[in-house]
Amino acid sequence: MTDCLFCRIVARQSPADIVYEDDAVLAFKDIYPKAPVHLLIVPKRHIASLMDARDDDANTLGRCVLAARRLAETTGYAEKGFRLGVNTGPEGGQAVYHVHFHFTAGRRPRSDA
Ligand code: 5GP
Ligand code: ZN
Image 1 (tube, helix red, strand yellow):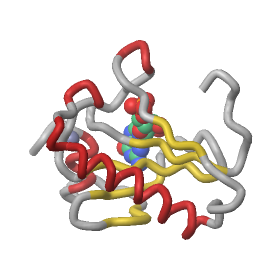
Image 2: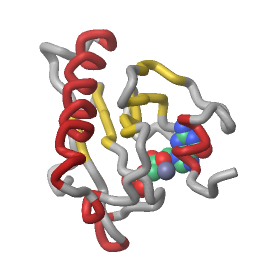
Image 3: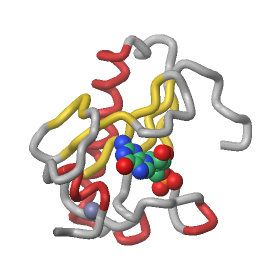
């Protein structure tokens, strides 16, 4: 079994509250939400961090961004707006080394983030 938490969630070897899935992307609720809506959007293929992304990951990463648009529509935040963030590296606050986009909505974002 892989030791990557998000690969295990993609493989259904660890539980998660999944809100969106297609052939390239999975989105699920953050277990410790920091906003009224806090979702994590991940590529199904393991990419450890944005710094490990290659040119041929562009389509997959773009699909993650477009999944955010879809999630904005399904969660009711298309008009009100939302925030999409990718913590990268130790000083970027990345704790899980499988690229993920934080989708947060329902409160004003912090001015420093
Ligand atoms: P990072 O700090 O790497 O940008 O974000 C990791 C995120 O994963 C955190 O917001 C944290 O709450 C979330 N997280 C950690 N463990 C789990 C888990 O087992 N399940 C889910 N759904 N989210 C998790
Ligand atoms: Zn992984």
